[in-house]
Length: 157
Image (tube, rainbow, N blue to C red; front, top):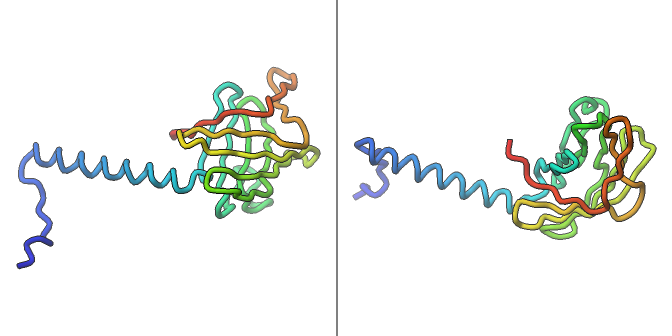
C-alpha cells in the first residue's frame, strides 16, 4: 500500500551513477534558480581592471575583511588587486529585480559617488557611476581613471 513512499537505492554501479548524476543535476538547477532570484547577493569581478565587488544588497550584512569589527555590517565593498584601498557600499536601494542604486565612499572618507548596478541576466552586471567623484585606482604608482560604465561577471570560487 505504501510502496510508493519507500526509498530504494540503486542496486548496481550503473544505477548508482545515474542516481548520483540526477542528484547533481538537480542541485545545479536549483543553484541557478537561486542566483536568478537574488542577483545582488554575489561576488563579482572585472578582469580588465582586476576589480571586485562583494555585495548583499538585501540583508546588508557584509563584514569588511580588515575593518568589519569596527565598521560593522554594510551592503558590501569594492576593491582591486592592484590597490589596497577599498570603497564601501554605505547604502543600497533595490529599484527592481535587476537594478539597484548604490552610494559608495572610499576608505578615507574623502571621495564618494553614486552608481547604478544592473544584473543583465547572463551572469554579467553593468556598473555605471552616475554622479560624484571619479573612480580611480593605483596601478604602478599612478592613478588610473575607471570608465563610467564597467561590466562585471560572477566570480566562480
